Image 1 (cartoon, one colour):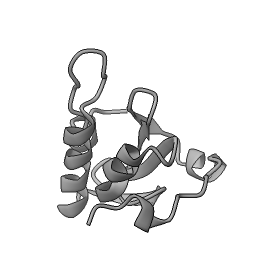
Image 2 (image 1 turned 135 degrees about the vertical axis):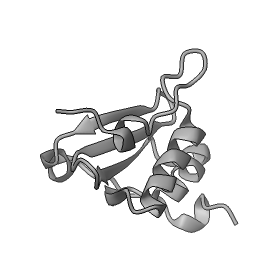
Image 3 (image 1 turned 60 degrees about the vertical axis):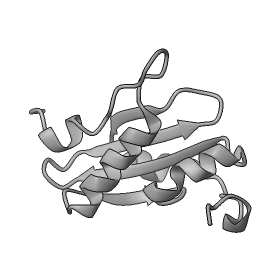
Length: 112
C-alpha cells in the first residue's frame, strides 16, 4: 500500500522506552478527526477521553479504531496501564473480532 501522509504521520514518537508519545499521538488523532481527515469507527471511549480513563487505572486496556478517510485504512490506537501504547494499521475485521470489555462508569474516571 502507498504511504499516506494523514495516517502514517499520526504517531508522535515517544521518549525513552515509549514507542509513542501518548498525549501527542492522541491529540494528533483528535485533530485529524476534527478536520474530517479521519473518523472514529469504534472505541472504548472517544479519543478525547482515552487518557483520563488510562490515568484512572480502572480499565486495563483502552482501544480506539480510527479510519483514515484519505486512504481508507484503519488505525488501531491502544493504551494499557501496564504496557506501551500501540499504534498500528489494523484489518477492518479486527473491530468485530475484538473482545470488547465494559468501561467503568464515567463518573468514576472522567475529568470535570
